[in-house]
Length: 196
Image 1 (cartoon, rainbow, N blue to C red):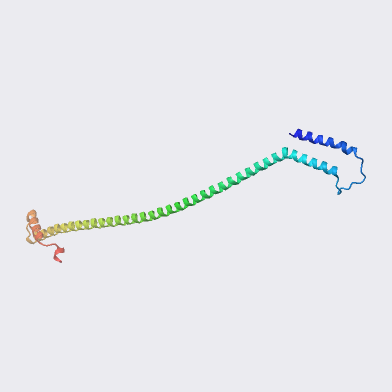
Image 2 (image 1 turned 90 degrees about the vertical axis):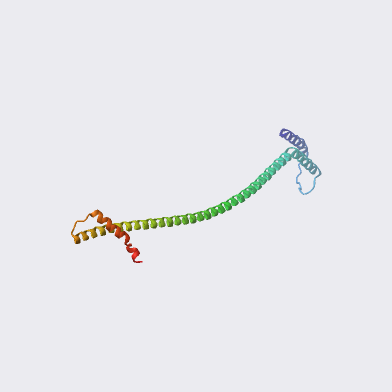
C-alpha cells in the first residue's frame, strides 16, 4: 500500500515538473491574484491526496482511535464495576462489623449474667459450708460438754467415795460404792436443767 502511494506521488510530481519547466519565469508573482492553472493543480493534488489518505491513512487512524476509545470505555466500565463491587464489599464488611459488635455485646452480657450466677452459687455454697461448720462445731461442743460432764461426774463419784470412806474410815467395796453413787447422781438433774 505504501509503495502504491509512493508511486502515485512520484508520478504526479514527474508529470507536473515538465509543465513547470516549460513556463517562462515570471518576474513577479502576486500570490493573492488567482491563477487558474495553479488552482486546478492544487485542487487535483488536494483531491488525490485526500483519496489516498482516506484509503490508506484515515481508515487505520480511525480504527486505532475507535479501538482506543473502546479500550477506554472498557476501562471506565471495569473501573465502575470495580467501584460498585468495592462499595458492595464495604457495605458487607460494615454489616459484618456491626454483627460482630452485636455478638460481642451479647457475649459480654452473657458473661456478666454467668459471673453473677457463679458468684451467687459460690455465696450459697459458702453459706452452706459455714452452716455445716457451725453445726459440726456445735456438735463437737455438745460432745465435749457431755464428756466434760461425764468426767466431772466420775471425779465427783471418786471424790464422794473418798470422802465417804474417810468419814466412815472403813474401806468399802469401791465397785459397789461406785454403782451406788452413780445411781444417785443419775437421779440428780444436770446443772443446766437446774438453772432453768
